Image (cartoon, rainbow, N blue to C red; front, top):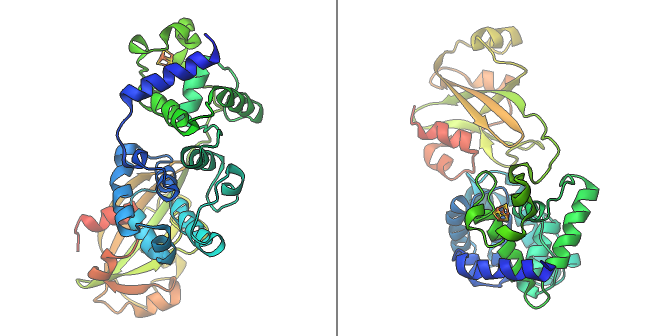
Length: 354
Ligand code: SF4
């Protein structure tokens, strides 16, 4: 089959099978950009309610630029990968301050903006401004690697070029945005990772991987890094009115979000009181741990083993705070509701142990 035959087949498939999603009903760059950032590493079903709430809260790029980072993080809470939200905010401010609130229209200019890499720039440029630049995401890699039985590693520079050239050859000039969305949708619904729908696939007769029966070995990608185990010990210093919380300011996961007094250890601490005594932290005051809760929280590159130690603040604990921990603030529960927090912390609070 000629390359144009693949393009037509994918576009025809898309015309029949595309999902009716809100960001597909517009070519407004603000909405397309938002959906592309939100859906990175996120399932459509998970991202959809966030997208709707976000648009409701920040209907235009100017509304987003005017908001505080904390407000943006609060709207993002639960979606993970919070760097995306911080960059989104930075980018909105830049577009408003440097471009008068109007998105630049070319792939090259878009790529200069914070948080906009090749993928997002290509999506916006092709969907909103009809520039024929191909997108490469996990779905596109999978579809192309199977259709053409590509053996190159998608994580290598050489491999990347092979995919980019092929995608460029397949894209159409008159409606590149449709083609990009079509091939991504085809990967998301038909040519899926584990059980591709080959028997009902419009491209079955032209698919090299299908004839070689190696679909599950495509795409080839170098092995992922092993996840890092981290041990978070949270001292939850609270009473029936509220809790001490800290904003995370270091360049680490959850930057900008709020959590409790954290002691990170190299391994699991078996007895927190002994540990704190050894550190000299408890020497000035008498205090007690009331509840201990453990959670395992799995992120893309790390596993957080979290232990929460609830400590009742009705005991004289101020000295302990001033001498030994970060400068947290006491927040009542209504305020805590409006602080952006990692899902791990939110889940702990929702269990209602207070
Ligand atoms: S035949 Fe199977 S592997 Fe090939 S493109 Fe279709 S769904 Fe994907």
